[in-house]
Length: 292
Image (tube, rainbow, N blue to C red; front, side, top):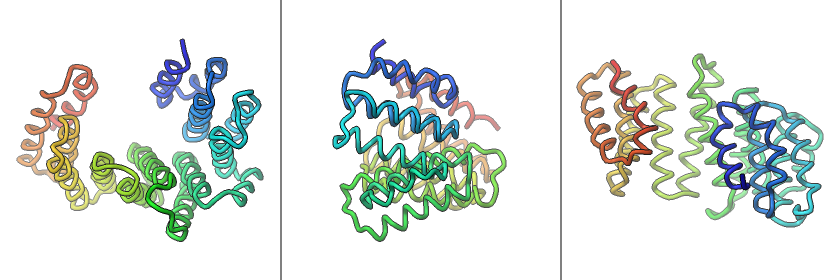
């Protein structure tokens, strides 16, 4: 197995078997042959040890080991990336190594705060909220241009936080507030850092977030926004399917059987236009939407 295959499989598996992926990360070290691959492995380790396992110190130890490899360039891309990974894990852990944030640029501090906030979604909601809000406050003060990578970092962190909290069966008031803020953060910063596609998907995320938050009016508005962007850009069938799925779920929750049936018909039409691989993983969404 080469590094690309290892890396792809690890990302595919990590959400369901995070512990096993963490235990296999050392195998990836022997496959690294470029500085870019070293950075990719560090980012994977940061996410697995942070967001999924909450093992900040183990994550830092692994990444510090990567910094000892010959391919590591302290002043290059790998040096910058590994410092952000280490600082985010230290910030989540309350470790003294988080003091390195003071020496970072505003952009890097925002990115580190966003990463740490996303890591804490399932581990410490109040701290996650404080870190995300602090990153947003600094972003507002910094006045960085649209090309700055902190916008993408905030968009990704917001999406990941919202996704994680949407899956919780019993959310606290604090978790509900964080879920909504996270989805709004993703929408705002994808509009800056992304294309219409990321913006459309952020509207989908907001629709599901508000659905889970129990505000059907907001959920319907964002599902309709998603579909408007889909239509305006003649989007592919996959985007049409999930736009209609979001609206169908809202109408089902509202007890609108006619609206649900109409959305289901549109979703099925989009499903029929997918290729076989996409149909295989989208079928469950259609089945769930069809369920009464």
